[in-house]
Length: 379
Image (cartoon, rainbow, N blue to C red):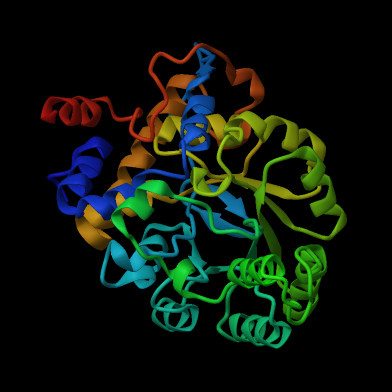
């Protein structure tokens, strides 16, 4: 993949190769896309405060997560429709992550399914579980994930409704979540029955299935570390710790769930303060650059998860494209650490960042000015 000297080359190649509806599905978000843009805005509102006159001849960007070593503080976020981007789907991402030395979080909606991924990629994996109403199904799924050798379960707390992603509606993109009887579709059915004056089926009314109880059941039955994905407030972080969550995953689902939410980098500091070391913290939402990653580490995250960047890289060049993306990220991180005056991620503290005015309008591609210029030139 020597033809990809920069991340911008990877993103541009993905745009050139993907059908426009799929590009839009990967790149954009819900309704007005305000949450999506605030993710980028919250990162661009942080400036670095470097230190000078320091020996940075031994920069090491590695870290640990749940006792597993990461070559860089990056993980591959769960991508449900990953097979749209590469025929090998989740297997391609898992193989690349393991070859490079990081972790993949395998989406419960991904193809091939979790059992195939574990069989084809015997290294460490994390499973992203999307809650469903049917308790026997949930118990069987958890048992299968444990038997397959997964190291942790990410409990995805995405709300009970599939959001209106208007670009997808306008281009008729169909995703796994829409085709699968998930917890969200179950509650949507309950809502429709209520509105039609019918007696709802088992569990009855909206909200009567207690997600905290489901989470505790998953933790009890799996005996695995539990990651709670979707935390966007200190109040929920506090509850998560009280319910035995091992990792807080700060996420607004890439701006693809609730519109008009806050950017994830905006809420990270308050969640770190609330958790106060009682759980590890990871984050996603607009992170596409090595400097983005280091901002999150400085504010207290252990690692950053990447969904869109992963997707663009797979679309641009399959496993080789994804490997090249990780190599460039590593180089960006090492260079930025050296310029900041640190040799280890543990040296980064909130003192290395401060608030600043963004210099560009927030956009999912605003971290790639050449790509933005090329798109503008097409019009």
